[in-house]
Length: 252
Image (cartoon, rainbow, N blue to C red; front, side, top):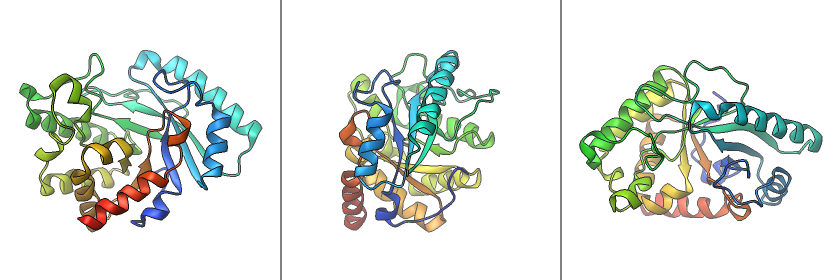
């Protein structure tokens, strides 16, 4: 695993932001230049960050590899006094396929999304129901864990990417997961060497899911990370997500 320290102290988790996009991700703001991200991260008191630009399909890998080389060169030139992982937000877009399936590349960190259902070509849920989206998510995660493909799962279990297409509230899919199901899949991920992300978007759209993840994960002993999914500079700081996490956990 990229990072083996296990803590359930939110202040400790918030010292690391392991989900940040540069302007190499088309959805990120132009201001997300590497040097600026480092400046904001240092000002926020972060000890570790991960750069996780999107890779949706395998044919995007050559450009991604080139961009990673540029970022590593910048990291070496700047020599920051915080730890910087140059990784990617990869995609498990089918229950039997994912970006780095059979592909070896140099990367510090493999963050995997399995629920970007708004992306063209992404496998959709069985029969189009919330329960069906849960079931296809399970199969996608089983595949990642079986192949030890992921270091962390990005915005896990959330159905918020279906809000526009389906008109569902952000917690619709999350509500289909029982505590036993969450416990089983989170333990399976942990045994494969994979961590689970507390993501800013999930906290806003499905706080009850976050509460259950925290308490179940703490009970069974998984590793958690915090990722703000930063697409703009103000989102690099983890203070807001930490405050919300503590409120959700306390209220639960």
